[in-house]
Length: 354
Image (cartoon, rainbow, N blue to C red; front, top):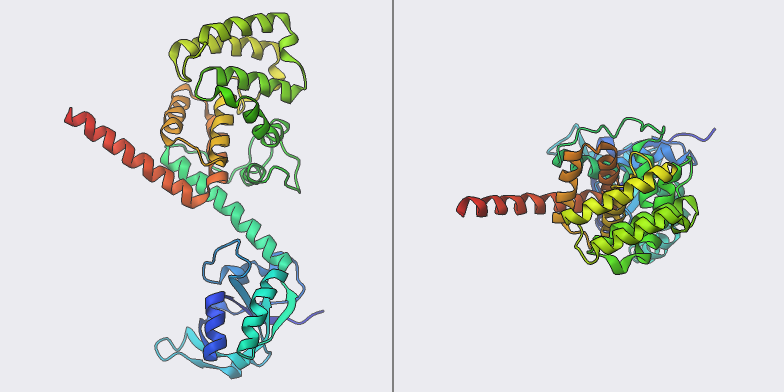
């Protein structure tokens, strides 16, 4: 069995400082013991002890494999002797990077100062770490949005279909994940959301968007020609004539749309779930497509979410917020809620002034 070895994960900036100055200040707990060649998960604690880096930047992380006698090459830091030490460059047995492209980047930099970078990489554990951290960040973003909108859904608990919310987030961010069987309706939505949106793009901003989205959804999910049904086709034509060029959200248009939605749901209940309902499928398609295209209108989103809250449509809310968290990530999710908070405060101040 391979012996345990000592490793330290450092940022590219730290590595450059070590190579140039000959030593690096480290907290003792950053030294981790791992068997070389272990499963990727064994490297989690090592990567976690590194300072925060740009997660997907393979050049921003370097792993130092220490010599077996590395304690001979350290000295306590005078301001924190029990917790911090200065590690000499001579303590490093091997400088490891994450990917071949990172090697191409770091190798010439090391040569300039007499440091040899190993051609061996940690691409498998690093790839696992990146995906794991991205998965956690998607849930963090969703939890932030849930908290902002006053929702108490616990994303750490399994869903009704047995999937974890983290798996759903992965599916949304990357429509063909591996390792689990996705919900058929969710899979259909994630794999076809772009094509559905493209097919009905000319109706954006109009109530007809939701009429077209409903038809596209049912035909895609069930692989049928919905309008070949004479009754559905007749109701479609009358609904389209009624809503004409009304904007989405128009009350009269919503009444007409709800009649059509009800008729389709009665005829094809298998096309829908509690999450992806006749009433919400168009809005979900709109907001997720807008988010992916960086066209999300925060005010529209705010109004829709509070409308769902009034209707008690919790499953659709949970899916939408989890999806938005997966697509936005923590930084953009917080930017969204900051915008909404400022917008609401300004609207409140304006009302009080008037």
